[in-house]
Length: 161
Image (cartoon, rainbow, N blue to C red; front, side, top):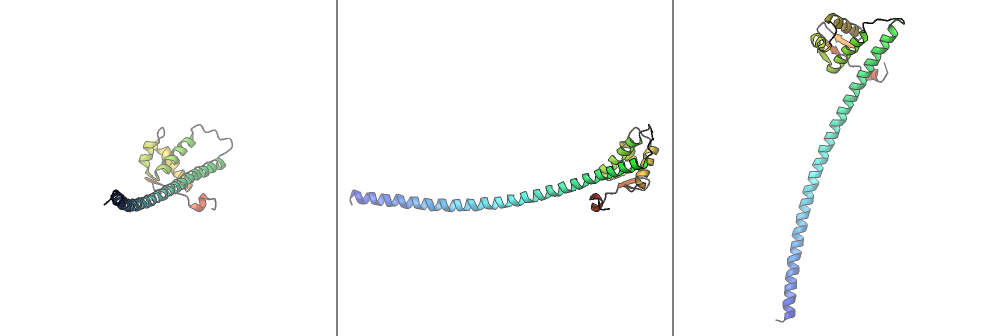
C-alpha cells in the first residue's frame, strides 16, 4: 500500500467520524429545541393566565373605584341639592359623613362598633345618626349593628338608571 492509499483511508475515516459526530449533534440540537419549544409553550400559557388574572383584577378594581366615586358624587349632589342656601352649620357634618362613607366603602361590611373605633372625634350617637341618614338614601343597609355597603349596579354606574 502506498502513501496515497493510506492518506485516502485516513481521510475517509476522519470524514466518517466527523459525519457521525454531525449527525449526533443534529439529533441533540433537535431534541433540545423541542424541549425549549415545550418550555416556551408552557411559559406562554402561564403568561396568558397571569395576564387574564391581572385583567380581572383591573376590571374589578376599576368597577369598585368607579362605583365608590359614583356613590360619593351622588351623595354630594343629594346633599348640595337638599341643603338650604344660607346654611352655616359649623359642626362640619360633611367630614363625619365622608369619613363614615369612606370606611363603609373600604370594608363593604362593618359593624357599628368597628366604625366608631375608626371614626374618631365623634360620639356614637352622631355616627349612628349619620349611618341612618345614609341608610335612608339607599347607599347602605343598616340593621342597627351591621352596616353593609350596597354596590350600585352596572346600569346605575353607566348612568342608565
